[in-house]
Image 1 (tube, helix red, strand yellow):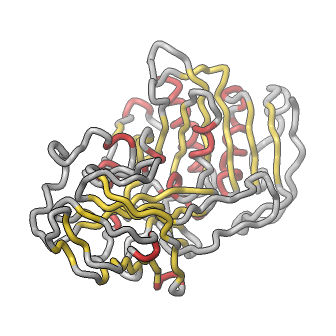
Image 2: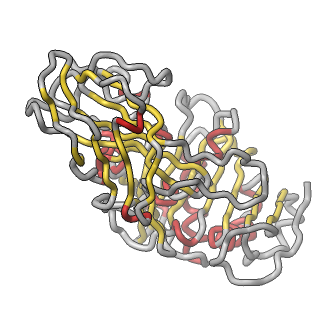
Length: 378
């Protein structure tokens, strides 16, 4: 590979979704008077629909819907489920419980769920969180209505929300008692109007040119990233479903949006750099690309070279085992999860690379069967 020809391109995929439609703290300054992005909705009876999605475990689901009306809204004093209804024909007609409805003067979820005068109506949906995350028992949410990532063996962001029916169950009137919109179904949610607030500090789908090849990857930097400091770094490879199966926009970055495997490393309580390549296979080509990307971050980012860690899940474990087998000197420790070991052993143990393997209880179905040789050395 010719390292002298490295060029980085950073398509602003996440920025498109965030344009005036983000349900996160980064929109806190966008009030009705000075909100950038989409123009004010001046048609009294038209509405704009947007949403935010959240990743929890292997489930990526809508968590909130925003309806923008043409004027400030006066909500009637009714239970949330009597104001809006959300059901999903794509999930066999499953319905999602509406847990809170309130007005706001900006595109933003309010933790207190209290209405403030505004033309935005926030419709919050039932939480999709495992109530016992430490349990080894299988878990699934009560309703999968509002899936934001679809999967038929390979994952992609959902692009068709025509089956998601959002019904406004009452007439909506302004605070001056003007009719804003009669009861009925709202316009179809467009997938590019779905934001992902959890990934506010991620750069999604960067591209590193290595020789004649493009290496797609996403990465996370701490909010107060300082080039004068040195940060630990985790390089994590996803499973088969989150590989780069196509260059379709809906699949780019799915290694981040498809599960919480990448996000979890940002929630350790310590500032850390997280790098997640979206590779094209689980063999030698991807192993070489992972090494090139790791070297790129070591050379161009504020990484503590003594604290570089690796993780590989399922198909990504097969690739990463080749990476650490070839260059154990780059890594302080490696987590090998639900996978087969394809790399070499001769250099791993002499380098005192700390490795741990996990197989029992796996839900992976894509890796080839075969033993994982114990390589633990702490």
